[in-house]
Amino acid sequence: GTMSSDTVQSNAKDGGTNYLLMACYGAIAGLWVLTQFVMVPYVVHLLLLVTAILYVACHQSLVLREEPGQQEGDGSKTQGGMGGGEVLRKEDAYQFPILGSASLFSLYLAFKFLDKELVNLLIGFYFCMVGCIALYATISPLVPSWGFSWKMDRKITHPLPKFLMESPLVIQFDLTFSEILVFLASAIFCGVYFRFKHWTMNNILGICFCLQGIERFSLGTYKIGAILLIGLFFYDIFWVFGTDVMVTVAKNLDGPIKILFPRAINAETGKTEMSLLGLGDIVIPGFFLALLLRFDAHKAQLPTNTTNVHASFPKPYFHSALISYVLGLGTTLYVMIVFNAAQPALLYLVPACLGSSLICAIMRGEMGELFAYSEEEEEEKEEKEEKEEKKEEAKKED
Image (cartoon, rainbow, N blue to C red; front, top):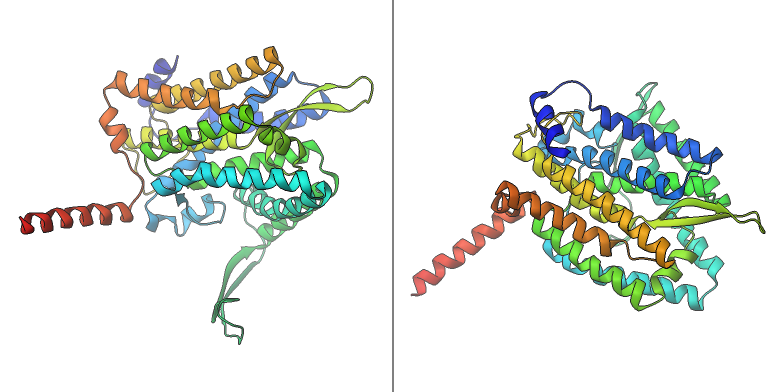
């Protein structure tokens, strides 16, 4: 049960190692190696891998709690050398399903009316570039820095028009030899993936996208998270059940936008049949779970000046939502197998995540605190001040 593990954890404060976190790292790597040789039942493969990804990514996202000033020096390394996180605003959350629908439908039309090979070539090229950065950002923090350091801090003035390129152009970086090697290795990996599109390479990129996305991205507040989940809940149901759009795009699109799980080997063709789970079904609930873990950390009054991802503290919200997520994913698979039809995973995952966190808040009497928790720093304060000023003005007019 979650509660018992929490009480044990809260007594064993800082220091030490979170063995579950290490086990999840091990599970991600171990499953990847094992599935090259053994046909692991895909339900087991899927549930284990996704749980491990979420556990790792949410804990890595604890760095988002750091004060903006703290991320220089030490902190920037933990960020995978890519700087701090992004915070979602309420407006963005409302627009997400609309923008998602627009891009999904555009892809659908592209596959219907254009040359499928060409569409996949362009998309594949784009994902190679992004994948290279995601892979680099995932691996570089794990590789010890060594070798010479290559620094550059230059301003270049040029005659090109402003809209093409800023002038003076500032070029700043500080790379060690080991980081350059990691980047080259990532680039080579993506090149090989681009050429052969093997499912195991697809999965590595997919896993990196999940880890990087959840690690860098804050929903801002619980309300924004709820708006996003509910919006995408309807989006998912509409495009999967209402139309053939989602299924068409998911099957035709050759990019690492999904994680593939070998299901069986077709006796006639000798080809491996795959099950797939879209990255959105991991990343979107992942944003929400990560927010809950940071709320747990906030409740446990963990310091925000340094981040220890191994820090031990009670995690009632995170644990209950993660367990619910896994049960929701299990339900999705069960329904998919019984009815032999594609299922919108968010149909099961959104109620699981929202429901579990609300029940947890009600049982702990912390509804108000959960809804008040915010990670939007400055902008929000300014907005509140503006509202108060308007109130003052209204009073004066009276």
